[in-house]
Length: 305
Length: 279
Image: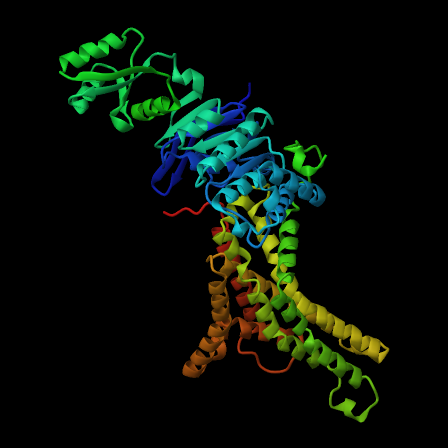
């Protein structure tokens, strides 16, 4: 199946700093997460695909169209939800969203009708006549989503959509995104550093680190088969044991509360961990098989990079 | 089914071809300015000189003895446009937030993520100040000319002064373009509309004051090229065939105005971007 976004050797530079370095990636149809730590190049990639930043090298195609040759056609078919607060001053919500619809090419009457519909859809129906400048942080996030949806795009770019939202608002936003991707069949690329958000809403993931692709593929495939990940807590010199496990070829990383997550290869099992612990005079106090999470995929990808 | 029950629906209607976004932007900005009461009041007051001049034209077209002192001459139209300078300044200041407000609210990245070019955005923002300045200069001037024809009952004045029509149009356009480009360029430099207004006042009045000072020090009138007010005066005098020796040739005044507009375009090209890159 043709990817909705295809990058070939794309490089972007801010002065002397390379934000993206020869990135080659394909984003399949559906919901794709764009993961990476702060400064990895996620927002840069999105802005380059939108045509807001010219790349220094490489080719990009969005929805089958070349970004350099057909930027207007592309922007007419995509919706962009920026990371920062963004709105047109001195407008109420329905006027703002209708205005964005008109800018995207909708006739005025259709734009106004669609504005009302999407504002109800994102949960701002009752507040749609209030000035956007008076909105709370969560409401501003919803209105950004509404203006990205009003013209019924084929592809949505969502940059940190749950930024600054309270837990309930965040859950509602994630439900909306999941509904958009899986029930409304709108392709989306969700850029976030919040792994649970991406894991809940997306089927595929592209992990960026330091301007390069560290991992890419279906989340289920990247997680690997169950049973290879263990939660481990030891009594003794945990740092030395961590180093010993790494030296023995086990991928491991520390998490909160003194629990380590250890990737054990197929040919070795939990018994190997006990043998290693015995050799290094540490006690194994907690050992439990765990389901691989996106956090493991991310830690592995970023660690290797 | 009520809208609130419909959920999200895919859109199957028509979409406009590219190239019309500038009008969407311009229309929105024009209506937004008109919603502000002080600005509406300013536009209303800006037509007060028109009423005075209309009465003057009416009286001068009668056979009353007083009519000889207030006869309608081409100078009337030149003086009227000169009088409107204050309202041109105030109306232009009223548009100070055109781009500054968008920068303050990060609206630029919204605009430029839509299917419109930077040129469309700039044109859309340029139209409101252009329209409002012409509304207080070109429109009342042409109406005065029309009133003169109506009150006089003949085209003799117009036939005798055919240059008036192009003079009024050309000068009003040049003045409006200069004001619109300068305010837009200044608005793109900052996020504060107040600071834009201060900068515009500086460009208008500080340069005039500097010209006077430099002229006093050096005795040379060539310094007039730094003052947009002086340059517009020279162009107006030439267009309306007024007497008097200009401080610099007309072509230099035109070049100076064109250079200011070009500088404004350069600033807009550099500043209107979807992403601010800090080196």
